[in-house]
Amino acid sequence: MIKIAVTGACGRMGGLIIENVLKSKEMKLVSAIDVSNIGKDIGDVMRAGALNLPVEDANNIDKVLDKSKPDVLIDFTIAEPAVRNVLAAANKKVNLVVGTTGFTQDQRLKMETAIKSNGICAVISPNFSIGVNVFYGLLSEAAARLGDYDIEIIEAHHNQKKDSPSGTALKAAETISNKLGGRDFVYGRHGISPRKKEIGIHAVRGGDIVGDHTVLFAGDGERIEIKHQAHSRQAFAKGAVRAAEWVCQAKPGIYEMKDVLGIK
Image 1 (cartoon, helix red, strand yellow):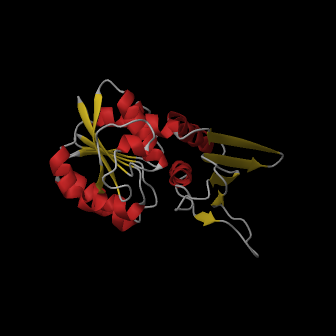
Image 2: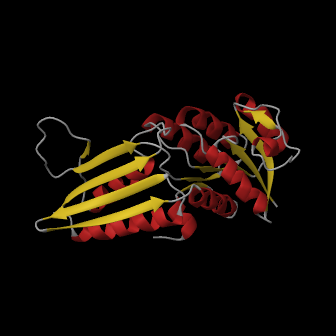
Image 3: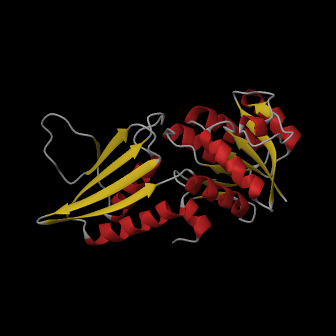
């Protein structure tokens, strides 16, 4: 039985992840961690019926991990607290699944150093859906054949998303850029801005949009659009739980969702 701790447990993603963990015959939820609803039963918070598991304070994560002894910590929060959660878990030899985005290079380096020095296994990905990871492969293939086309990325998310552009959009841009030997990124445009051989990245925030990503390859007389639309956060939650099972079988190291799915 794989013991799971979830940070951001009272959020939308945290709740969905917990639902998926509870449905799994291979997993047991041992800790629900957040900064709100401390002491309340997480089942009551989710309106799913009492689970006899109180919400633990994220500010005391070291003590929480010592008490619950999870095999895997799943983190879908925001960048700064996520770094603290990752460092705490790594130091406790707890494997990680991290779907939080918006990290700075310094934050990413701190997490990677802690993971490697403690010899644990972590899956860190901006998007855990199966479709998005196939989407990346399609972008790489298209870039190999359409490198002389103008390339623009448009992403749209709900009005509560903190970081911009999305981690998925940045990963898409990096995938294309790597295939083409390197391209500059331009984030939105205004005023006089003649187009060069860059990749344009544009962010839309509104309503309850779960996540849309469109990559436009525009040439003379034609264009190709490759699009992924998330209809529900369930696509991300299901993938994260799948990664949590996989991470317990893998060798120590830092992986992406494509490794979980066996996509080369």
